[in-house]
Length: 485
Ligand code: GLN
Image (cartoon, rainbow, N blue to C red):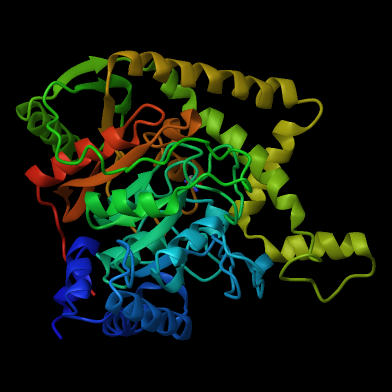
């Protein structure tokens, strides 16, 4: 079989499966073979779930024969390893969860299984999703399949790399400050963070609970909409889950973008933006204008504070969320301890990596009695102001467009020792999480032989409009780079 099949999108494969040109068993085996072959080199997958996948594929083939298919039936998917999978080890790429096997499936997994998608493996990530390069993993760094000397972005770097490298057709990631969109941009695929609350967080290993959201990484915008249709649902097990009718996310696909008002925030063309990224961005804006969108410069001055607000709120929530890892309830325990306090301290000391420790220290500090008002409370107030500033902008605009990141994929090891440089990578994506908005990243150019990303942000519940604009852009542009592996 030609390896072309490994780069098709779900719609194309759906057609082939339904016409029985290929079976899900054959398709799944193709992907698993490819994935196991290249994984020692790119390290995007922590564990392959071959037996489970083949069993699910046989069941999917039966459903296909009975003509009882959904969009995802029989389609191979990989799952970021901070999403709980029943009876399958879930590590969050941390030593502290070594050997932890969840007794239940996350709600998104239940939804995927309900549609008979085929789970082929768990993908590598920055430990507890803290990072922008997938170098902070206890399983080692992931390489970008488009250039093996570069990072794939992070923290969902394993998910983005596995889609780009033909190890699966689509993947799930999680996005707290850009962790779906930034790696999607670095690996030349599509990645979307939905409106906060549309996708259940039940079973997602918590990082910053008021910011975390699960979303798809895919090869086409239509696929992205259909994956969202499958994974989003109201969930009583998630207190922030939205009660609303779950419409078709692809409802506006194909509608003209003529007359749509798009805001171009001047503050996002930050100092230090690479010229290739800027050129790609400006070209995309021209294309959208030619299609009849009305572009207008806007000012979002408070976005400048989003990064500072994020690096108070996210570590604060993380320090609280990670307090449950005491060396007793889950995963790793130390071998040497004289008493229970020492046992917990040593287990945490041995189990967490440096970036996670840095966040716990930061978070504990900003929440401590003497500093709470000065840092945490103030950050919460500024968060409200940022949210209001976006709300005001969306009274006038249908969408806001920025580059996804100020630069393309950087070298492995380049930024790992300068946290601030690493944090700056998320300057365009973080404000979106602070305000709970939907946003997508779609390939929009090539700079230094690496992909750039266009970042389309919508108002709360404006997911359909974001998808409509992205789909239109995808139709008028073609940016694909073949993997080098
Ligand atoms: N890079 C950001 C961080 O390290 C965002 C991570 C994410 O979205 N999970 O916190």
